[in-house]
Image (cartoon, rainbow, N blue to C red; front, side):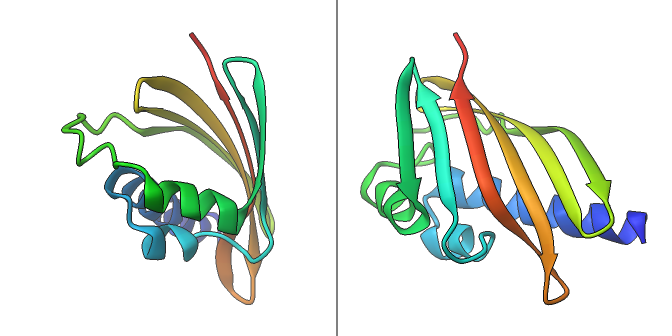
Length: 122
């Protein structure tokens, strides 16, 4: 069960990274459960958006790929307990040094991101 879950979660995170990096809103949206809130801080400024507001922001900006950035996103760790999981990610892009904490849950036999917390570290 664990090996199967880790592969499925790594696949969702790969799609999440690719969606962000390429600005692929369709791929990114498929990673999230409905009505997810996204909370974080960017240089000390609070950030709170619905999934739709977040996706609109991704859609309207130039992607890291379009800006010729090197893909440096990586998984730091994943912790799974039954049908829930936490993933810690390093997501450097667009001049920021983001760290994401994603809460995931197995919903209707599919892993989905149910919460996203992030911060920018200097």
